[in-house]
Length: 481
Image (cartoon, rainbow, N blue to C red):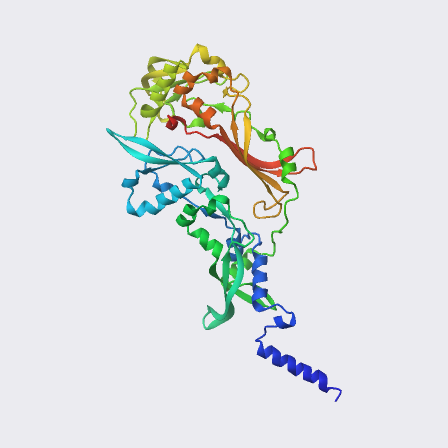
């Protein structure tokens, strides 16, 4: 009789296990669903691997964005992909093809939410003109953007695996008459209930035009192949993938990001962070045609940096391709600057060409700064300097170390700001000069847009470590006329 009780308990345990199909959650053990979800949540933080990219990690690290179609643009070619400088020109409402109606509706929804602006413009096309709707980014839209240039999008957040809806044991063929056991897991994916959508993403027009938002809020299903090896759940990898990993000398990646939070208080960051630490002394310089930063081309630049002057040539008898806009745009712009008194011009009979035109001579016109404005070129910088600007911080975000946004190193700060020039040099305050010189007008009206990312270490005397940043004028040069 002394062996009866343990034997009875063992029999009851076997019976219970059979009854609950190995689900021991009623005894305090994790259920199959809980164990699989825990493994998936762990691999959401898996670092990228040279030979193996986890489908789980790839989904979790993907930025969920609203993207707009720049292919809708029907006006002049956009001069730049930088924020504020691109435009999307679409036909007037009654001229939009049916197949593009939904895309234009998306743009209008973003206008309603304040991320884009909309303006009616007239596009000259030969002898006629046609009305277009011009969409451009706003400062609010720039703050909502993630990514750079033509890859930029309006950031919503990152999706997570929320629950396990179904588990199905399957046989996976791995060779001739050879199969492996795997588990097809149907997971619910979307935004966590604790996540907060950006304010603009709740605008009714945005929600209607971009159903993806509701899909991420409500959750959607995706399938993942999982396996159980020695009681441990992990993503299933095919034999060919394992063979490739073995050939490279690498196994499964076990290197994960941590979930640590930022240590630096944002208010402290605002006190300590100074944009002057990494400001380029040339960023506050505006350009004339032929100088690199504004992208307006000339036929030949005759300026001497040593002499701190400005001198360019436009050819009269040069055969131009249909993409060459020097005669159509640059020359009229230079003539406007002559009318303003900023430049003087004179004809020249023989000017040697450059690059493939070297050895060929053209007649043309030379444009240079007038005597009254030669002083505007800063002697130290050799450029037209607008002075020290006033910073308006658009975004200042602390990125915790060892996370998706900062793969290695200390925590970092990501910033965006607009630099305006409320107190420009006296010569720049001339309203007549501003009316003729669109680069000056644009610089004073829109300012300089800057963004970047730098490491932080407030325990050291130097507040910012390694990183990168850049600035560009937030106007589109002659297209602002």
